[in-house]
Image (cartoon, rainbow, N blue to C red; front, side, top):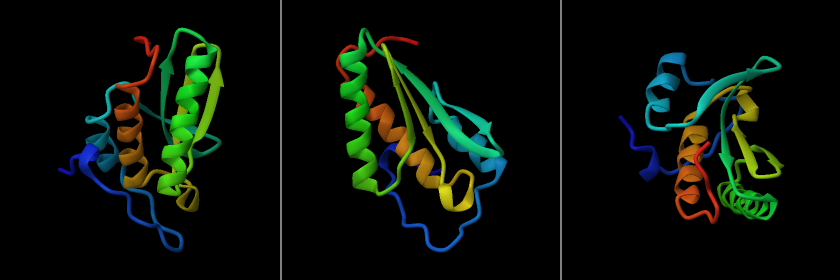
Length: 120
């Protein structure tokens, strides 16, 4: 099995197919705290990160934005007082690809050094 924290994102060309539910469940085992959800018919990978205040949440949101820009793969980010919710999916296939799981793992890596992160 691929080690998500060590993996590199690959470019998506055309209209790729989403990975299978079985593959999703296998990869999800490496991402404690993440869940697979469906919104408006699109399967997404989502996790909430909790902080002590809005400023810490906003700082983390900006770090996630830098991660997304560097990978040229962009999540939905919701920043609230003390909370950041990240949702990853591949727009071109309206579902999940390996890159979504890799970037979720990178979010977790960033969270390990995030100021003010609290247990959710």
